[in-house]
Amino acid sequence: MAPPFHDTPVPACPSVVLWGLEVIAMEAAQGDRIIVRGRTVGSSDRHGVIVEVRGQEGHPPYLVRFDDGHETVMYPGGDFAVERGHAGTAG
Image (cartoon, rainbow, N blue to C red):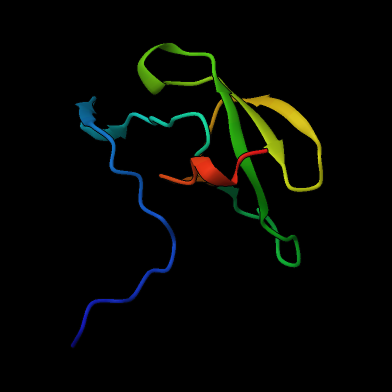
């Protein structure tokens, strides 16, 4: 049986094991596209672009401009995915 197909971007980030749990460090760059998955049935995903990385070496927080024009500073959670290499679509 083939493994399940996932169309969700998977962050290629370093990880560490802390108290027996794997912790993945989020890293992103200005211009990367982000997806915040809807948390409840019927809620849609939100898409945007990282306008500014305010942490060191690609770490949060991120200033994000969503496709609807709303801007906010975010610390990503488990519902957050990054699509790298979309710097030409920022703006």
